[in-house]
Image 1 (tube, one colour):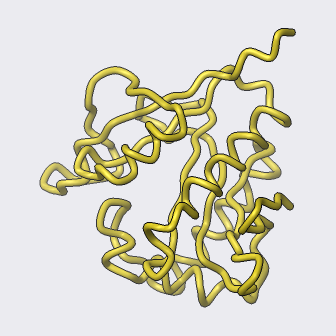
Image 2: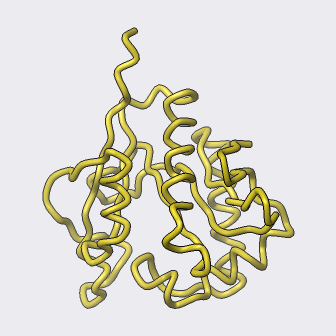
Amino acid sequence: MIETARLILRPPVPADRAGLHAMWADPAVMADLGPVKSAADSDTTIARHASYGDSHGLGFWAVEHRDEKVLIGFCGLKPGAEGTPIAGEVEIGWMLARPWWGRGYAREAAAASLDWAWANLAAPRVTAITAAQNLRSQGLMERLGMHRLGADFDHPAFDDLDPRRRSVAFVIDRPDTGR
């Protein structure tokens, strides 16, 4: 579990299923991430992210608002997607339910995830990808200290006509700890 000033990042529990499904079923949340998900697709996604803990020591956490005790998002680390410039690297990602946008929660959760990565993983850097059209996430990546990695690329998870296919990668190097 990770605690910040306003958030708790913790492994998802069964009670989080409805809140996570609501986010994945919201067209506005998914506009730059992928197609909306059914309840079954959401369950598959939760299970996939849980499996990263066993296979890679990674995973996404449920993001809970400390004071309101409500699920507001999903954030964490996973293996970089195959067929992309970050394949095999550590990838950070996040999503928040719409009512929580624009309040700095995504940055707070992502920064805590990066701190966890530096403290618990030997990775020399952490990467992120998003649709080239997703300027909000790119802005957050920059505020986290990330910078563009190479040229735009076509993400293999999206078909040729999907506007999310054109993607960008960002990276942040491990901070120099003076070791």
